[in-house]
Image (cartoon, rainbow, N blue to C red; front, top):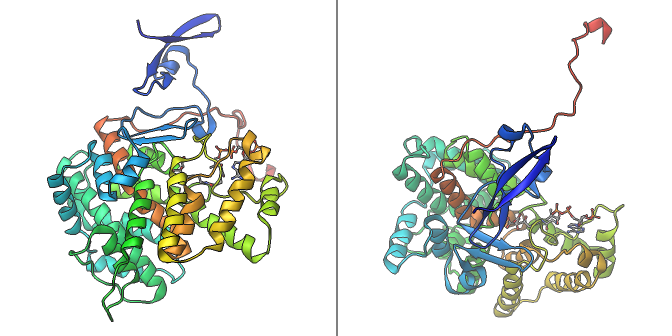
Amino acid sequence: MDETARLEVDGKTYELPIVTGTENERAVDISNLRGETGLITLDPAYKNTGSCRSAITFIDGDEGILRHRGYAIEDLADKTSFLEVAFLLINGELPSADQLEWWRQSIRYHTMLHEDLKRLFGAFPKDAHPMAVSSSVIAALSTFYPRDLDPHEPIEVANSVLRLIAKFPTVVAYAYKHSLGQPFLYPDNSLRYVHNFLRLMFGTPCEPFEVDPVVADAIDTLLVLHADHEQNCSTSTVRLVGSSHVNIFGAISAAINALWGSRHGGANQEVIEMLEAIANEGLTARQFVDRAKDRDDTSRLMGFGHRVYRNYDPRAKVIKKKAEDVLNKLGVTSKLLEIAMELEQIALDDDYFVSRRLFPNVDFYSGVIYKALGIPVNSFTVMFAMGRLPGWIAHWVELHKDRQAIGRPRQIYVGPQARPVPPLDQR
Ligand code: SDX
């Protein structure tokens, strides 16, 4: 007999089914609540509300567990490349050697941007934020592929998925090149995904560009670590916007803007700006932590805290180790890394953070690596978007496979009751 939850309202008892997932998470299914009781639920910010069933990613926030299609993030970061993880998220299984070769080749084939689309970059100011540029260009891609926009035509979806994954690094690089006033390079199909990106970002037509394998490997791992994170703000955006049956480019453009927020992906840029402010103002880590705890001070310890993790974000652990490795290999020291580690040590011993179960999240250390790798600070968040792209795509595909209805939450109205419009001379 299926489990149920019992709800008693106005002297009537209702049995609501309890749904159990493959990792034994349980939910009260309220799909029929309003029809049966006339009631809705109220849950601002959806802290207690599941929006869907999904088979893509599992997080245990108490234990600090993150798995994609059953594979632990630590294992994936150690043993697979970003394109393998992208294939896994979207298709449900890791690719075979032949499938991976096909996937790599297909993506390589789509890395160029239409020559007319390249002119769009020139319309932006030099200091335009790369998240604004990338969300605009990604939305504009829909105008160049009008025959591949139907969310229910598999071949059209497949073409658009390849174009998004292939062209996103080109878009990021061209946004950066535009900010410098430097020419755009054409992609080089003889290079692997991240190597091609780094050449587009930092190469010039004047001389050959050698990609540092240490840098390429670190970027690839960072992309793996950002690839998906179940129903976070930007992924929930993809699902809600996607449920209107807009094309995938429109849904991904919306997600880029959700990720831009300082509480979400924008935090990685804010972390570096926080660390630089501490260094430049000569603050001690202790002084800053005290400011972050002070309700009257707007400072927050950026890169700390998480809606789901009430333990150490497993991605932060891998990134912290990678930061130390990469800096050692590059032979550079980082004052910012030292400050970050000091902040972490103080915060993890401080009751304010311990009692609120605030730990470092994915953004706390990622900026330190990006900076050491030469990525410009205002491109940190668009690097997060490049990593999260296959996760957004996987959820968009899953949403349409499940034929989910259009997302349309209800509300509790607290405004004025019915009243007549007063004539202008009486207002
Ligand atoms: C990402 O959802 C995802 O999975 C996101 C993500 C992904 O991969 O998609 O993991 C990526 O967005 C990581 C989070 C990056 N953001 C930051 O690092 C910004 C700093 N962190 C916070 O703003 C905050 O922790 C959130 C937004 C991440 C989570 O916010 P919640 O769950 O709504 O928690 P809250 O804001 O209600 O905070 C609870 C308490 C509050 O204090 P009290 O009201 O109890 O007194 O903790 C405090 C907050 O003031 N608090 C912090 C803090 N984070 C929370 N105090 C100081 N510094 C912080 N960083």
